Length: 187
Image (cartoon, rainbow, N blue to C red):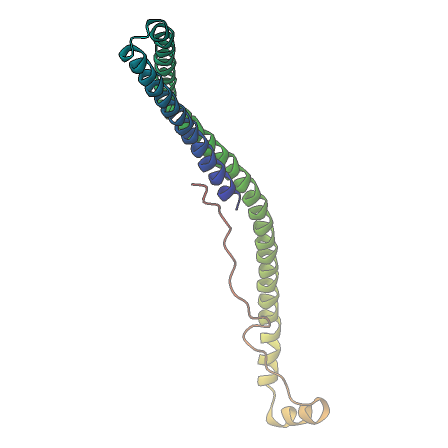
């Protein structure tokens, strides 16, 4: 179904958004590990009394701290924007489903018109059948009465010359009543 495809796209987009945050978190862990290593190196340099090395490593510690702060800011910004991104994704899904619903409604309208035309044609034929049955009943009832009023000898003579008199049935054509119009439930 088309809706399944749309829903899969929606889930894939949400997963992509979540994976971006996970990637930022992984980068943050790497920066923290780098910072820990640099701080350990700084600790060794200061414990050994190596001032020049400690000065150099201190700059690296400061850079690593700044890098960590930037990464944490990126994570915060991403976390703040995720609800809006997911909401936009949900709205995109709903809008696509709405467009699809309009497509289905258009298709249903075409089929409804075809069905209603067929029903109207059927109902027109039913009217013709009713008219034929009415004519049949009024015309042939007279002749049934005429045959019925014949004397026994005339009935016997008719039978010998023409065969049995076939009394009319109630209706020439039996039918179901008219069909109802088809309607569409849109919502």
